Image (cartoon, rainbow, N blue to C red; front, side, top):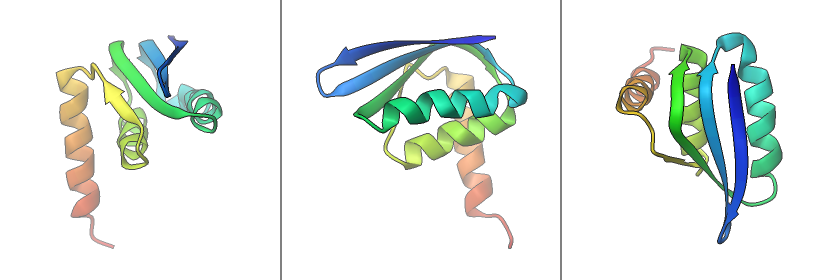
Length: 93
C-alpha cells in the first residue's frame, strides 16, 4: 500500500510518496502523478518510499527523463534507476 501527500512549494508541486508500490498498483500511481504533472513542475519526495517493483523503478526513471525531480530518493532505489537506464541504453533491438 502506498500514499501520496501533495504540497505547493514555490513554482513546484511536491508529492510525498510513502509505503510500498507493487506492479499491480503502477497504473494508479501513474494516474496520480500525471494529474499533478499537468499543472505545474513536479517534485517527487521519495524519502518514505520503502519498496517498489521493477516496473515502478522503470517509471521513476522515465519521470526523471521527463524533467520530474526525485527528492530524497533512497540509495537502493537510486541504484536500481541507474541500472534501468544502463539496461535501456545498451538494449539490443
